[in-house]
Amino acid sequence: MRFERIGREPDYSRYMDLKEGWLDRRIFSDADIYEEELYRIFARSWLFVAHESQIPSSGDFLTTHMGEDAVIVARQPDGSIRVMLNSCPHRGNKVCFADAGNTRRFVCNYHGWAFDTAGDLKGMHEEYCYDNGDIDFKNHGLKNVAKVSSYKGLVFATFNGDAPSLEAWLGDFRWYLDMILDNEEGGTEFIGGCIKSVMSANWKFGVENFIGDAYHAGWTHDSGCRSMNDGMPFPPIDMENSYHASVNGHGWEFGTEGVGDLVLLGRPKVMDYYNKIRPKMAERLGEMRSKIFGSVASASIFPNVSFLPGISTFRQWQPKGPMQFELKTWVIVNKNMPDDIKEEVTKGVMQTFGPGGTFEMDDGENWENCTTVNRGVVTRHERLHYRCGIGRQIEHDTLPGIVYRGQYNDANQRGFYQRWLDMMTHDELGKMPARPEPQLGNVAETRDLPGLFAL
Amino acid sequence: MTDTATLERTREGTTASLELTHALTQTLYREARLLDDEHYKAWTSMLAEDLHYHMPGIETRYRRDKTEQVTDLTRMAYYNDSKPEILKRLSRLETGTAWSEDPATRYTHIITNVEVELTEKADEFRVYSNFYAYRNRNERDEDSLIGNRIDIWRQVGNDFQLVKRRAILKHNVMLSKNLNIYV
Image (cartoon, rainbow over all chains, first blue to last red; front, side):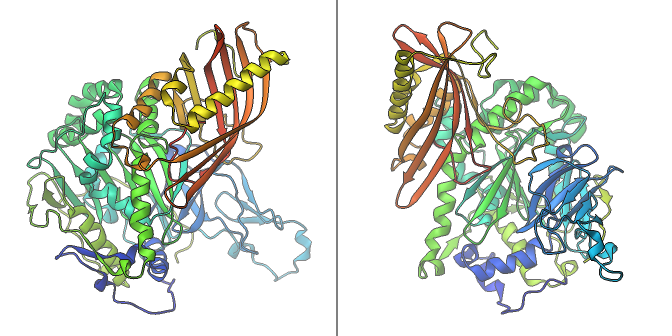
């Protein structure tokens, strides 16, 4: 990896003991550790950048961030997707200020340097001022990322030319991802628009909440659950038939009752819809996954994407310093759903997990205070407890990954921080251990899309 | 949907009388006071049964981009609610477990730039206004939500009921952790 930060090399393993089940709070507040995360995690991971449905046509683009790097994601005339830095190689200005749109050119406001949607430099204001030999157009395009790849509609990019394939990165987690991405013929799409908000909290608190923290739901969200369901409290958890599954730092916590998250969405028509397609879902994904889908469940893809299968909120926790993240939220629906069901899902998501949603409203204050109390130097040296369910690991004949029994568990959180530690301590990603070794064969296809320059 | 007046002007708006303008301005102020004081029962009694309350999410797009962000109701929105949906959201506050509302948030709604117009319906009036909703909670949490609104208010006896509201919050990234407020 070419991007190295000059400075101290702390021993990150002293910030946690996952066999004992504790974390040092400085990983949620220390500015140096945060900087190092940008280098070692965000500049080296596969990062979610778009859903293909957001940029269906040639020239469609959106802007987003990979870590704190501003990027443009653009659909090419040949249907492929390019991801490039949103920064002019001349003086560095942003070349695109819109969240999304359609264009043939990105033109810098400063000196009129103009780039096509692949990022190639095509011309500039008063081009005659450059003498022969002053500038090589070929080497002054918008820097493309190293690799772009998509998995069933989700587009990922990485700055890391040495990154493993997206298939290997996701590994057996694809078995779980298919429950949201491929539970019906036609796949998925995002509803138009994106709602963004800001929290004064460390990005990892959002990720770890969705990766495994079913435990908070019945307490934090008692009011949300009761408001969406005529006063009914959170459904009881079946600790025998619910699980945590962790693969390479990704994680999915879930029940097998099939209805919990659909109940929490509070839209009976959506429940009816999924119950109608459930037999087909069972043919498509097998009995087990058709029972998991719609249950009380939440999931995160390492490092910073989360979603609720059944409730259909899809979100990304964008790091903005050790004590701030920007939350981007979308609604993911099945493409073949009738319009009125898509509308029901969208309303349900915004009423539960929008900024004004009955669930979302009670999360932010918790994560903010989990983070900001660490301004206190004594406080930040106190350990946090992550030991729940530490003895409940099982082998399961259907469920891939590192599986723990009982939905109330810190297992997926421990799996996430183990991967965090792996990345913070391994110079070569190829030498990181698989967690666990892949158990399934090649369960699904990914399409590789070209990146221009390897880093 | 129904035959209520439209938020968009169908022709050049006709300015309402001084008396009507005064009555509706006072109605907006009363509504703001009820929201400041969290008197949601009294507030929801000002909402018509066929209410549509809409606050769209607004993306930053170039001027040439004609994507209809405001009137396309299929897009993501902070609020795209009927009255029963608003009541559902508000019922959270009655559970006693809405942790992030206890201690209570302190609100001030400032309503300005009120214009009242007659519509094609004799008992419905189009009301433009600007809002500045300030929130402060716990020690230093504070934020300012600023934007404008277009409403349709219907006269019912001596009172008015809100039939439609489109509130445009001027944020792209909402600079706050939640939106526990109506404007």
